[in-house]
Amino acid sequence: MKKRIFIILLLIITISSIFLHFKYSKTIEYYENGKIKSESFLKQNKLQTIVYTYYPNENLKYKAECSDDKLNGKQIFYYENKKIKGEFFRVNNLLAGKAIFYYKNGKIKSTRYFKNNNRDSLWQYYNDTTYDISSYGYYKNNFKIGKWIYYNINGKDSLIWEKYEIKKYKIGLNIPNNWKISQDIDNKAYLIATENYKDTTDFYTETAYLFIENRDFLNQEEINNYINSEFDKDYKEGLNQNNISATEIKNGKFLINNKEYFWKNYSLNTEGVKYKSLIFLITTFKEINITFAFYSTQSDYNKYEYIFFEMVNSLDYINNNDTPTTNKHNAR
Image (cartoon, rainbow, N blue to C red; front, side, top):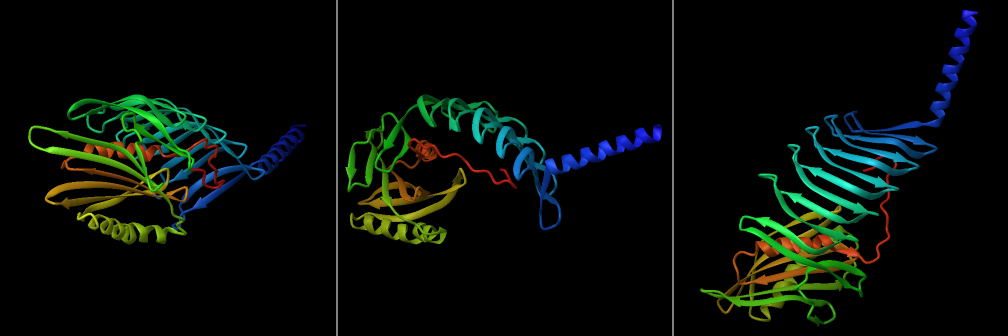
C-alpha cells in the first residue's frame, strides 16, 4: 500500500514538473566571460513574472515585474554597489504613479510622478551635498506648468514655465513665461528672448534664439560631421559677414532618453565688445535640426545654461501617443 502511494505521489510530482516545464521557459543571456547578463521567464514566448539583468561583477542591475509580454508592476535599478538607483511602476509598459531616484550613497536624488507615461504632478530634486531640496514644481501632460522654485548659492529663485507649441513641426517645449516668441526669421528662426539692461559698470545685452530647419541625417557619421565641421564652418562664416570673430572654447554632449544632444561654447568679439555664446545642437529629434543659441555680454550665464537645458529636456511631440517597446530578452 505504501509503495503504491509513493508511486502515485512520484507520478504527480513528475506530471506537475512536466506541466510547469511547458508552462514557463527560462531565457538566459550571458556575457562573453560566461557570467549571466540577464534572466527572463517566458510563457508561449511572452514575458511573464520577473526579468533580471546583472552587472559583469554578477551584482543585480535591474529587475522588473512583467505579465503578458509587458512591463507591469515595480521596476528597480541598482548601482554596482548594490544600492538602489531608482524605483518606479509601469502599467502595460507605461510609467505610472510615484518614482524615486537615489544617489549612490542611498540619499534621495529626486521624487517624480507619471501618468500614462507622461510627467505629471509634483516633482522634487535634491542636491548632492546637503541633500536638501534644490528645485520643485509641477508637470502636466509632460510639460512644466506654473512656478518652479530653485535653490542655489545665491538663495531662492523662481521661474514660471509655460508650454509653447511649434505646430509646423508638431513639437512642443517649455519656455519661461516672459520669453515670448516675438519674430520669425526666414521661417526657421524664432526669437525667444531679448534683454538689455545697464548696471553700475556696464551695459549688457542677452538674446536667445531657437533655430529649426529640416535636415535628414542618414546616419551618425553625418551627424558627427555636421557637428564637428559643417556647423562650425557655417556659424563662423555667418558671424564674419557681420564683422564678428568666433573662437570655440569647449564642446560636449549629453544624453536624454537615450538620445544624444550636443553643445558648443564660443567666445565672440565685435568692435571690442566681447560676447559669449552657448549653443545646443539638437540633431536627433524627429529628423529635424534644432539649435538653441544664447548670446550674452556677461561672463557668467550659468542661469541660462540650466534654463536651456530644461528647454532641451522638455522637447516632445504634440499629442504623442507612442508607447515604448520591450525587448523580450532584455527588458530594460
